[in-house]
Every structure is written in C-alpha cells, then in structure tokens.
Image 1 (tube, one colour):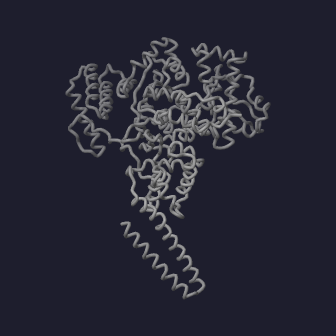
Image 2 (tube, rainbow, N blue to C red; image 1 turned 180 degrees about the vertical axis):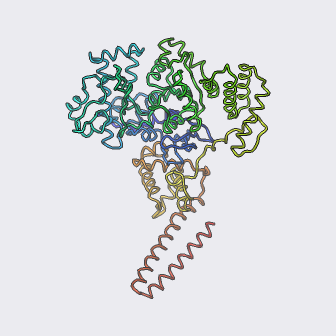
Image 3 (cartoon, rainbow, N blue to C red; image 1 turned 90 degrees about the vertical axis):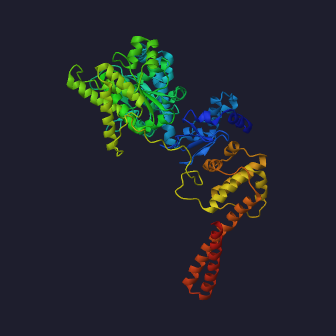
Length: 626
C-alpha cells in the first residue's frame, strides 16, 4: 500500500521548483511590472491576462479567473490528481521521491468515465500495434520499410510507431477482453456496416500515434504499405470525443520543451519530416493535421513562442502551400515568421536521406529566409523574366510586397537586390515604391504619405490585469462596497496574525459572501496546525479547488503593505452593518406587502414608518461612503 505524500515532502518539492520556470514550459512569459504575463493556457485570448508572481509563487488569470500554485496549475491543465501533480513537479525539479509515495499516483482523473475508457482503449491499441511491428513476423515488412526510410529502433520507440496487419487483430483483441461494444463503436478504431458489425479501420498500414499535449494517444494516422488506387496514402482517425484535428499538432508533446529552449518552432508538412528532423537534432518541429493551420493550433504555438519557420516541400505544390501558410499566419497571428527551404525541390525527409545529417542541419542554420525574401522568389513562378512584360509584372508585384514593410532598412535591402538583378536605377524604384506606399495609406484612411517607410502597426495592448471579480474573472461592473471590504479584510486576516486575532475575537463576525466565509473556515482549521500563513501551502490545504483562484486573486490586489486598526475597524463595520441594513429593508418590505394583503392598516402604518427609518439610515451610510 502506497503512503500518503507527507506535507513536508510536498513543501520540499514546491520550494525547490520556481513556478515561473515550470509554467514557462507551457506559456511564454514576459516581465511586466513586478509580475510575468502570458497568454492563458486555459482559454483563448489575444491580450495576455495570465499572470505569474514569482515572489509569492502563484498564478492567476484576470480573464477566466483560474489561479493557484504550481500543483494546481498542472492539475487543471492536464487533469491530474494531486499526487500525480506533485510527482510531475518533482520530476521537473530533479527531486527524487520514494517509491512508496510515487506509487500512490493514480492515472489522471478524466472528465468522465467514457473519456477514461477511450484513453485506455487507445493506449492499449498503440501498445498492441507497436508490439506487432517490433516483435512479430507480421510486422517485419513494415519494420523493414521504416528502417529503409532511415528510422532506427529508438526513433520508432520514441514516437510509438506501430503496424496494423492485413489480417485484422484489434477487434479480436478487444472482444477477448470483453470490451464494451458501444465503446468500440464510438472509438473511431473500427468501421461499422449496416448490420452493426465492426471491422478494423486500419489494415496493412504503418501507424503514427497522434497524441495530445500531455502525451496521451488520442488518434492514429496510418500510411499504406502497398499502393492501391482505391486507398488513400494516409488514413486518419475520424473525430471522436478525444480527437479534434483542429486542436492537435503532431509532436507538440515532445517539441514543447525544445520550442521553449530554441525560442522558435518549425512547421513541417508531414509526420515523416518531423521525425526526420527530430532524429537529426531539430526537435522543435510540429505538423498540422490538415493542409493549413487552424486558429486553435496557432494559439497553441503563440503561447510558447514568438517565432515560427515554415519548412514545407520545396517543389511547386510545397511552395504554394508555404505561400498560403505565410498569408494565413501573417493575418491571424502574433508570430514572427520565416521560411526554411530544402534545396533541389526535395522535402526534408528526402533531403536528409540523400545528403546526410550534417548538410541537413546546415540548412536549418544557414537557410532561413524572411517572408519577403521567399515571396520575391515565389513570385517568379509562371513568369519568363527574359521578356519585358513579365519583368514589369514581377517588379510591380514585388514593390507591392515591399510597400507593406514597416522597416525602411528592410525595404532598402530588397531594393538593392532588384537593382542588381535587373540593372535598374534605384531612385526610380524608390519613387514607385513611395507612390505605392501613399496609395496604401489612402486606402487605409491615413492620407497620402511622402515617406517611403510605412507607418508601423499599432502597438500591442499593454500587459496587465483588468478589473477582477470575486473569483478573479473579468468584471462587467464595479464591485460593491461590501465585497471590496471583504476582499481586503480577508487578505489582511490571512497575512497578518494580529489582525486575525482581533477580528476572530468579534462575536458573530462572518463574511456576507459564501466563498469568503468558506475560506475563513479553512483558515481557522489551517491556523490550528500552522503558526504562519504560507500561500502555496494553504492553497493545497483547501480541498475545494474552486476556492483556490479566489485566494490567489487577493494576492494580486494593489494594497498597502501595512494595515491599521482604523482600516480594520472600517472594514468590519461595512461587512457587519451595511449588509444587515439591506437585509432588514428587504424583510420589512416583505412584511409590509403581507400586511397590505390582509388589510391590517395599523401594521401597514407601523411597518411603513420602520421602512422609512431604514431607508434614512441607508442614505446616511451612502452619503458617508461618497
């Protein structure tokens, strides 16, 4: 029987790992004031509102309200149990935990049982398919094919590549284990005929597991071994409860850490290109599940890097795909873009096998292009630059591209290239470019410009938190005076033990809002066994995970370091006196309505006078507030 991870061991792990370093694996963080900000991993946003406070070792999103410490971050992000989260953070910090503690970790608790069953189904399928590939005679042709493509056994193991044989085995395997028929139907691993009979979806195909950001298998992509005019070269799993191709990037689970280290990501066209690059040491590569990136995939990448290089095939279809990708990304992302081109019209996998690892890696070091440099080459296709009309067409198209650049230095660099290539007068080119810039400015409503340089794009919105509500989410209106008082007083109670002792000695004190009162109850229990408040420890102490972001949102308030007896007295007075006044008014109004209904005139008069007095008191309080 595994032992419960003791509090001192949890504290050791938490203290040894900087929350900013850990979260930095998942979110690109930038300093803004005393905190770090980035794009929230829990919801899609364009203005960073996800904040990390290194001093207090907490995070909080001022938009969606999520918050907590390093453990709650990974628990929420990857749906882990608390022991699993401790183990994962300990592993990041190279902290050894005794087997008696780590053995307690259970598989991540999924959102529902069906999701858990599907994940288990795909995990078992991936293991079976890889076993067939590596250890059986049935898999020998597929294994030979992969070896001929340059994949060694270690690479096959790293990516979990398997083989679905021609004689279908998967259905029989699950039937033998008495797997639920409805689960098999919903898994996407099988094809169902009109009679309701199932058969394996993948037959005689090399299978590449598709994994989510946590590294769990959620789908497959199968490459056919024997070409057939009636079969697609690649066959992907259909969309299921686990798999939405718009939200998945191949190899993102393995590439995320290298992307962070390299500060860039390489977007490849196919799985084999990603794998070829990976085994050559280029490990920050991913591939989309379709012909173009989706908004969801773009956002995944924006969270972890500023820079993306497109590395598609260098033949004409690949060039067209690169052009589409640059236009899509240029209009829909915050990423700095570049292009990496393989020589000789090859795709990356072909070039590696033809030229070897050294030359392959050299392309990634020396072959980077700007989007403009790529476009200048791409615009030449279908043109004969030996004749004048095509030359003019080309020059006009290139100048249109240069007119969109915000850097006059970059414009000048490309103008020099045109002068050298076509033996033109640079002043003539600059004059025409200036005219195009002016036309674009007019179309944008900015009037005519005499400057060659295009005005830079608007600066991004400043990093920083919008107003927060009780749970830290974006607030549609101002907080009430009572709630402001509750938030400040709770902050003081937790962080100043003298305030705690004074307020807890007040007979009948309690918060108005339930969430604050529940935190107070947790704090009472916490201080019975802890002499000093520690935010990270306290958030773990609370068993209600919904309250963690409430506590962390308090720590992001802009308040004075020191409190005073007068401040605390004012806060208590607002909480204990103002809200009861509202409740008394509502109670008297209800009594008055009942008295009118039964026709009791004396009681109506009495209650009306009492209600007037309460309103008068309320107005006095409001005037005092103003």
